Every structure is written in C-alpha cells, then in structure tokens.
Image (cartoon, rainbow, N blue to C red; front, side, top):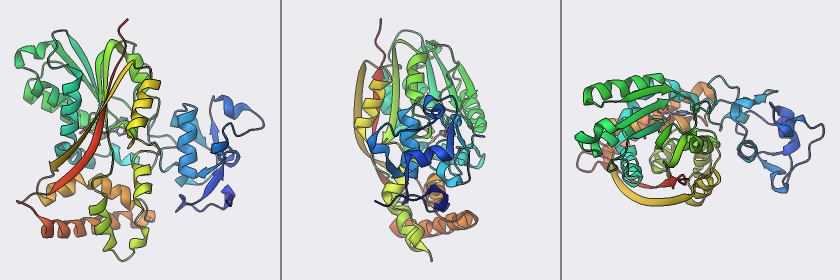
Length: 378
Ligand SMILES: C[S@@+](CC[C@H](N)C(=O)[O-])C[C@H]1O[C@@H](n2cnc3c(N)ncnc32)[C@H](O)[C@@H]1O
C-alpha cells in the first residue's frame, strides 16, 4: 500500500491516508514518554506500521497510555487531532473542534432533553450496582454527568428514607451542566450533592474516595486511562458502571437528511462516524469494554446488553437530541460551511420527521450495553 508523506497530507479529508509510525512521531512530540526520548524510533508493533492517521493516533495513545495533553503537535495539520477527545485539557493542542462543542452553554439544554435516550442505560447500571437497595453508606461519582441523569435516577430509585445514606459527586467539563444539576438537587431535595468541574477522571483525587462510579454515555469522550484511574478512586468492593452503544441509532436519519443536500458527497460513511464518535476506540464492541475493565484491574466484570425502543418526543425535541450528532456529521464539511450545513440538515430532518411521525412522537431503536465491574474486596 502506498505510504503518503505526512508533509503532503491535506488537512481534510484525512481518513483515507496512511502514515507510518515514524512519520507520526515527526509531527507529534510525546512529552515525558519513553518512546519520544529515543533517538531512532523503531516501530514497536508491526501492525502499527501503516495506519490511517486517526487510527494511528488513537492506537498509540491507547497502547502507551498517553494522555492527549502530553501529545504536542509540532507541525501544522490540525486535523490530525480531530478524532481525539479533549480528555485532559480543553486548551490542549490535541483537542478537537467537535469535542470542544461539549463546553458550550448551547449544548446544556440539548443534553437535558437527551436524557430521554440516556436514562434507560442509567437505570440499568444503577439497578446492577445495588446502590439503591444497600444499607451501607454510599459515595457515588457521576462522571461526565451532563445535567445529572444518573444522580436523578439514583434518588428516584432509592426510597426517600434511605436518601441520607447516599452522597453523590457530579462532575463534568462543562460548568453549566453542573449548575443545572445543583438546581435540580435543590428542587428535588436531594441531601448531599457535590459538583466538581473535571475533564476526564482527575488522577489527583484521593484513592478509595468512592463506593460507586458511573459513566453514562461518556467513556468514549475520555482518555483510555479513565477506567484505571476510576479503579484507583474506588474502595474495595467498589462498583463501576460504564455504558456504550453497539451501533449509532441516529445515523440513518442524519444520512438520509444529509443526502438531500446539494453536496451530499461529504456525508461520512458509517464506520468513520463511529470512529470519530468513539474517539478512535472500539467502544461499540462489548469485548473491548470487558477487556478494558479487566485491564483496569476489576476482578468481576459483567456486560449487560439491551435493545430498547425509545421515545424521542416531538420533532423539535428529537431535533434537540440530534444537536451533537448533526454537529459531528457537519464536521466533515469545510469549517466555514459547517454551521450552515448543520442548519440545512436540521431542516431536512424536521421535514422527514413530519412525514414519519408516529403518535405525535419520534421513536428510535437503540442497541447498547453496560459494563458492570466490581473491585475485589480485600
Ligand atoms: C452524551 S452526554 C452524557 C451526559 C450524561 N451522562 C447522560 O447520560 O445524560 C456527555 C457528557 O460528557 C461531558 N464530557 C464530554 N467530554 C468530557 C470529558 N473529557 N470529561 C468530562 N466530561 C466530558 C459533556 O459535557 C456531556 O455532559
């Protein structure tokens, strides 16, 4: 296969190009990492020799447990980083245009509405965690909490007389999400809610802080070491719940809408969207989730698969839920066209929804799974 010189790679589209490990290292310096301090690099894994740029980037980050903020871009080619999560710092040169959307105020209301599709997975994880039925005090972490569907569901599923024994920390990179959670806690009378702005899982939190941790529809937005850091922050016998999707439920809708646009050729193929949505990691595979949880140190791991038909509400509500998916797909268009393309896709979606409407609501088939993992008690 032809190996493209990195110098000649255009900014976009980049997925079709292959790059060698050696070229990769010319463009990125990995701070404090042993592989960057060697004078001559030898590709440590044959399979890494030629890969598409996003795959190379995410494989190397994952393989060497490198946090994206330690990867400094030492050359142009902004789009090398487009598939990466903002996992360690939003100011990182490795942060992507798409992922930085999570920090905006505009997205908060969309996440709140999207709870209709995230709540079923939250309920499943909470049910398996045992937190609502136990008698011991619990300290839970709701990581990448958004507007707090995990926290809200914990209190909803726990009898009021047991609320006092549950303490929850909600954390997210977006502070406005956390203020929504605080308001919700005040309105709901939830006794002990703490919030913390956290990008990914903060390694400086003391070990053994939590009895339970939940990451609902967020693991693929964080760096691969999130699970092992979470393991460290749980006490013996602690529970970690992580959810993901086996397929992208909204792809067909957005594909059909984008196909009606004048330049539909930019519409990315399913695999590319999946790759970008999951920051280059195979989070759609149950085996990957199971392996990642075991490698993080968890002794007992159980993956629970579910298919659900979920009500996405009225067409305007459903469009709100599709805000980030539409932005994700529009990121394949040139930067100056993206806002306009996103609006046009939304207009087409609205039109399609009005044609398809069932009982006044839009329904979506979801196929996902939750990883339930327990730290061995010692
Ligand atoms: C799909 S929403 C899920 C929200 C919530 N857990 C739920 O189930 O409804 C993803 C959330 O992750 C947050 N997020 C994205 N990247 C993050 C990161 N690297 N660290 C922490 N939070 C992140 C976003 O701000 C957003 O609130």
